[in-house]
Length: 320
Image 1 (cartoon, rainbow, N blue to C red):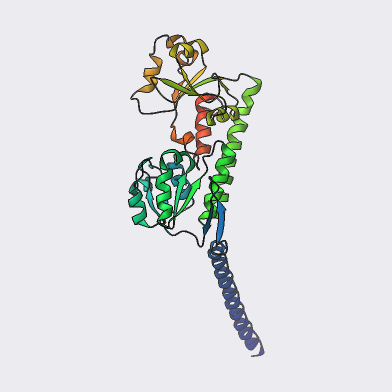
Image 2 (cartoon, rainbow, N blue to C red):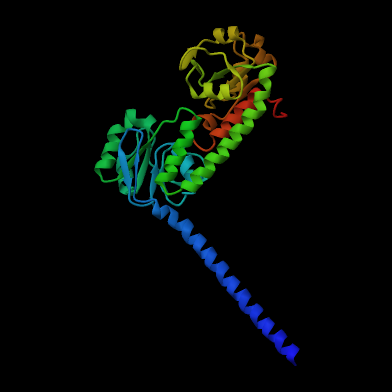
């Protein structure tokens, strides 16, 4: 009988202990949820300086957002702000959800439409100030917060841009994860292409338009990308250069990268240009089209753009 009571008491104690553990775990889970949801709240009010030196104060994480360029939009979606985005530019096509958002125009954006949306913040872009400065001021005059995002010119500035937008939207952790993942992919790509330095560094010609042909030279984003993947740019001049087909033939690049898609069958068109049959890139079928959005939009997909360029230049390194 004594043993029976001991067993009964033991069972009762075990039940209470399990219940207590469950309660403690539930409390821990609730505390974790509370901590995560309160992180953004604790970050506000927040004051940030935008690309043109304006101090922007945000009292809370924005609940309604208008994005004025594709790079901003891609960053905002990557941060998980699908529900908050109420308007995007006419050029925004990634991710697919961006196509479902209300359009506010392109370089000549619809001020009245944006004001009618009454967003908590408009993420503009430094690259659009030439044509859009007056319109942005009208939006500010309507009492709407405008944050001008810096026109990033390299990977480091892109990382900073993502982190800044993450701060402004209360998505710091998400921004850190995006940047960390990008850096990991960049490091992996560089490690693979770094092996070619001791062998043969390919000479690359990149064209961004057809008739006239324009190509990026020194101090451009594409120059940085080529340097990162151990490739040589055949263009040695500064900035964006207009170049003749004859000069391309004389440079005889190992690889030609076509960074635009507005010309149908452009790869075949390039190969069939007068004199191009003698170029190494044409002989070795190394005229390759790369999605320009991956390298021109300074957002989360930029690391993918680096990898795509690397695969186009050194397919053998990637087993392709």
